Image 1 (tube, protein in one colour):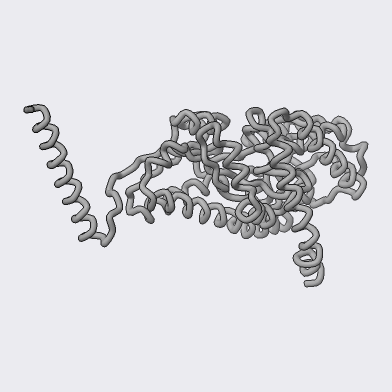
Image 2 (cartoon, protein in one colour):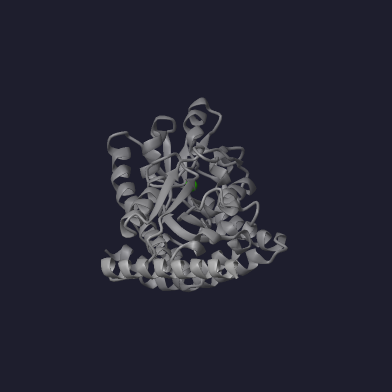
Length: 365
Ligand code: CA
């Protein structure tokens, strides 16, 4: 009997306490949102505050803190500060960090289909990709792919059109690719290999010295904004446009599903909207900086700009189609087939539309 009374007392006290808090919240804010403070960690694959890539999660975390009145505080860690850059996915999976910021193609070893959410050679532009992700079923497929790992992915920025890279030898024919040592990863790296090149995987920070020492003949990184900050113009003679291998690169926010479910609904909405704002903002920063930094590279640093001859582009395009169809065949899970068919269908339609719309306008203006 004593025990029961004790329990009842606890229930009554708790109820009064909860009601009082509720009353206080209503009085103070006109709302009943929980005042609980959440502290999250966000790990990234980039150096802390690296231009563009590294700034996106910082902008996101600042906006979440402001919008939530500091009820959700997110601390951002650069690559290697809490976990190495390539362990971001596993850290969010295990809950070591509640969030991550990275690129989906880094997880192609676990899920080959993840590449299609980051970059597809000769694929869609940034705006076309966003349309597929948000209104063409792409994001649902992405979230379905990460679901078994307890991770919710959200688009986390976009580099826009990248450049084909920095070369110390001119590419005037297919023969010039033969035996060329180039830092190029992802699906593009496989295409380059089948074209006769020697692709090398290497973190961004090692590219400069490898170009300078001759360990690499060529390297692709991002585009004028990021390439200028690494000073590649001092280590290579020719800058090739356009980035056939990455017509756009979508970055990602990774959210631990359990952590997300523990948030009250308003904080969940704040995370989602702040991610979308950071995603959009990143492309705008890249568009502005790529243009102004390209001008600096050419006018102040005397960079020589080149484009691949049509026969090289045609060959790389044919090989890309072969590589993707092999990826579909090799993936026994069926995910590549599912994601690629959604991507391809959306791409075919929007490409046909843009030929008469955007491209026509750009040609005419
Ligand atoms: Ca790149």
